[in-house]
Length: 306
Image (cartoon, rainbow, N blue to C red; front, top):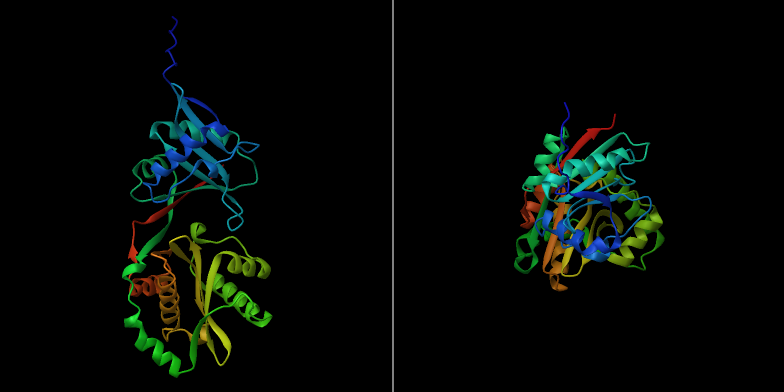
């Protein structure tokens, strides 16, 4: 007895991403994050070997997936990103995994808890809900620094003075900033999603000078606290807030962050963003006092590679 083959013309075709797909992929990825970020075609480039596949049906790209190294901060993991029609996710993932480069122990996926199609896929595909992170935004146009002035005055009387770090600061200041940055990485709870790529002293300095505003608190001339803001047009994003252990529990980080946000508002920035792992409760409390509104949770899914 023989069985007739079912026609497959209606099934999508999987193929590597081409540069001509960039507008469609940018639209799908923007839609997949509910417009939380807006992606442009210029952000998508053909690479060799390919790390992105698309699902094409009737001449239109209806789904896309990318599997690539997660980053230097998580060197043993690949990251899987999916967008478009949920019905294409399994086929795209299996095709990418079949060609995945060796040397990696696990695959991670990151999605917000209200991105239903990705959440459903990762759960059904046997991924583990491994870590949770939070994101938050602040309307700087409504930010009022006045409630923080009594704290700042008390700290000032105790010798703590906040300031913006100058690009021409002496080498001793840059060394102190890097030491605080390293201290924060060591002490701050984090997960793969909130683990930044490693920075050398030179790279940290270059990043601050080129695209950030860094603020420090001094006591007797010594830098004891740091907070950094990435400048992204009308928005600023917090990158690093850390206080030396000998000065914690006094509100130094709260006062310094309020100072930095007051500067950002005065400079015409309208929104501030931040985030971190749910385990970092002290920083979550600081940002809540600033008036940040916490958004839906971000979930990092994990699956071991056999």
